[in-house]
Length: 302
Image (cartoon, helix red, strand yellow):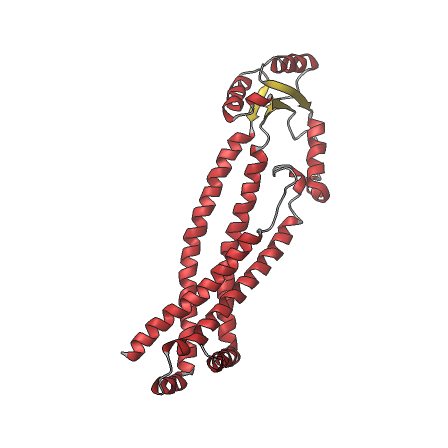
């Protein structure tokens, strides 16, 4: 494209953005909402992967007692558990200690526990497995043995939750693409409507350009560039909204829950995820414009 043609295209783009300002704003806003929802799924999925890494990196078994055991019964239970060949260490957590630990975990939000009794949480045993036995099969076998002991109410180990969480991550991945697909189609239709409005607003000018032999690429270029601008602008707004949403959640979910990978916690989309979101916005704007132009020009020429 020559310099004069490039200058003409960008003048037309600036004029259209000015004349149809609110139409472009509406289209960019629609894209922003679509990409915000899609990016929200990406954000949830990424942090659930963090949970998977955190729980998968430390295989421990947690035994919750049915009631507060007498000292002799507790000693007997501890000796029995410590005698298992796959057990490295056992730590007893009393109701009071569990309550204090829970309050520390909540931090500044511990006020929500006001009025609750300190013994509401059960006493428990935290059991660490020896290196060779830190597997799902070993943890499951130990859990089965522990469930048969007197005084034991419930037994949990992270691998159970890792499996359930993995299914949840898979469900979110499917929902992301299915719901995202419907939203993308709806957004493309809206982009197409914007292109048609801009086309009709410049119909006389385009007819003159066709009469003087202007190439089709020169006629289409302003509309395609406008679609690109709308897509990138929508993606930028979506990223900013996701960042604000992330900050809102980050201040309300204590990282000290200890369920994430070591040194981790809630985190925002990485550079790759952010770039993917911007590229999706660019592709939606460009694709919607090209598709609408092709259909509109075909009907008009006919």
